[in-house]
Length: 226
Image (cartoon, rainbow, N blue to C red; front, side, top):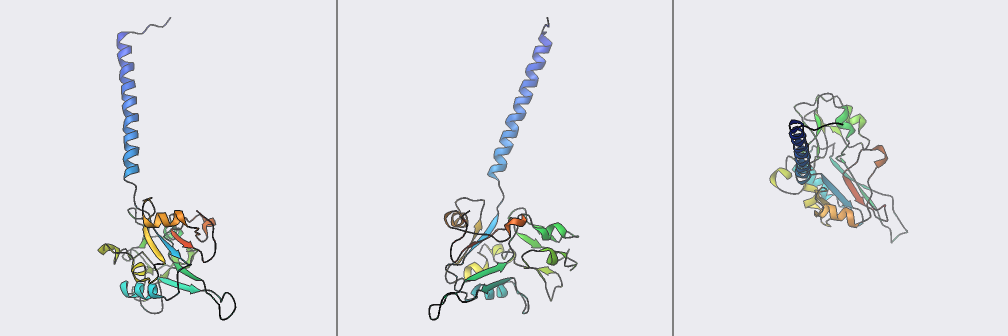
């Protein structure tokens, strides 16, 4: 028969307290991390109200000093839908998707392409970029380009260093006359962008690649509901 000495009993209680304290500590740490969840900025383009005016494109170009010949943002018009004189058009926003699993970041040899850990924004550090164009080649959305002046990779960064730095919305959002663009933090369930995605049929492009894009579209017709 095994006996339990006073010393063994005290040691066992101490171990239990230590283990319990660790569990409580880990639980508290988990709750703290949950409360401090970083932002995940995203954008919704509502194709049902976009009129293709390209005001967003011009605002982007002016605010971010994008030279002629290249563009961070394009609004692509579809072929005519319906018969004249009742024809309609669909307008599609093509720009950086700010992928959670960004292939451009994975292939960058210098670390110039990166995901901002506080916002989820995919950006480029010009000081580190050597213009190798690996990121341009691997982007499945074909939205990166080499800046003709800086000779480094460039693309939409949600106006991170311009409007966002001043506490404003991205230039395209502010310029849209029909409010077709919504921007905000998808990790905040009460944000306008999170509610927009939750309450509308939306779609994202090339999700089968596993990129987890953060550009959502409300379709002209009907789309898959997320």
